Length: 286
Picture 1 (cartoon, rainbow, N blue to C red):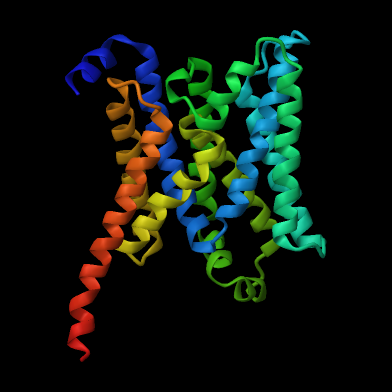
Picture 2: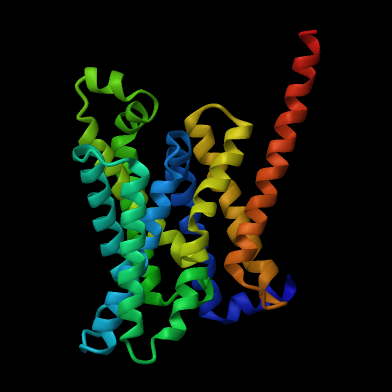
């Protein structure tokens, strides 16, 4: 712990990693609560896996075509938003089953990424960091874009709060009330897409769904009100990201996997606490 604090004052990469974890926690707590309430984690997973396609294309254009201003994070943002729009359009206008749509988007996005990564010279070594995350590799440019994404998410959720709550709990009532449900569902999926991009930087594509769902699910065990759930989920995610970064640093463990391990432990602790809290109530009913 002391070694981490000492190095934190000296090395910018640790400072960037800590700031990334903090900002990702805010987005994760807020949007993750909506995703958990709406049971849309598989949609988030499909979007997450599509980011590999955007990263692969951006890397190819950067190294093979000389477009050096393009970064993998920019490609991830573009791919995630395209995936969100495609999923929204197909779910609203197609007769295909939801699981079929998600499987198609999921697999096509991954396939595009793998093809472009394979055609990019000296780029294959980055594949593991994309899949499993490497928060210590966040650059100053990435941090600037992450800050912008976090700001956009917070403003959007603040402005759309009432409508997002309405479509989350009762779409039919929201539609009767005059809310354009399809449009706000599309906007919500775009918010999920931006959140996924933030979390991919922290834990990678494979583990992003776990970080999006576990803190919010744990928070749901402790409170029943959505604002309190968002705050609690943000706090739990912050504990997971910061704790995972600190614990993994000295023994050189994978930071992303350590973060998810802490998030999983917190989830089971909260579930156990919830069961203990409910037990006296059950006994009083006898």
